Length: 312
Image (cartoon, rainbow, N blue to C red; front, side, top):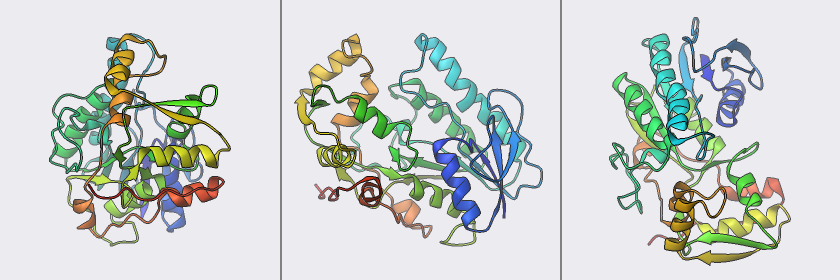
């Protein structure tokens, strides 16, 4: 197939490009910068429509991703809206009737409801704790209405990760790491699992030759993990020695609201202090199976293993 990938120079997009090329497909990399390989087609997600001429399918990975972007809340909302919502409108016009995968996020789920086992029917209409969650929810509503397949990964990690592991390592201070609340169960998503799902969803993957039914799908590793064990294993794999200290969740939320701990946000506290486990049943019915886990990543990084979290 000839596959157009937007945001091809980013973390997730670059892995989709490599996976598509490895599977023998032709790839056009749409974005401001060239992708890791394939043909570069310049496109700014904040202006103009992408040129998908010749493409058989589109995988949309381009997004404005930031929990604490610069500027006021209104400025942050406007900046992310320009890419995640207005950019989606332009993308949908250009894609036409081509099979389209729109990469969303589990951040669209309303955090006020229990997320111990989150299905795709979990509320997404309100409650998101930052501009990213709100604008991704608005963008995916447009994509679903247009007949796209929407994928909702959570906490994507892997080679080249610019977010999760770097931020974790930055939070270690004088041999200590503060975590909000007690230990919890969390879904994580290996970037290779997400890339595989993207290709499968447009009918270009290993699990079949038909595009998935155009609805939303959770994407994650096969089983959830225990937060504290993940943190210890990641620190060990990077040669960092630190003791974990649990801060009561109410105090962490207060610190996040008042800005007393730089970089700590209500969203970060919520994501780290409560169970968030994605139900993968719907994606599995399409024949997709996650084939990577955190242990594989840690072995490649430098060692350490993590046991899947037991079922509650």
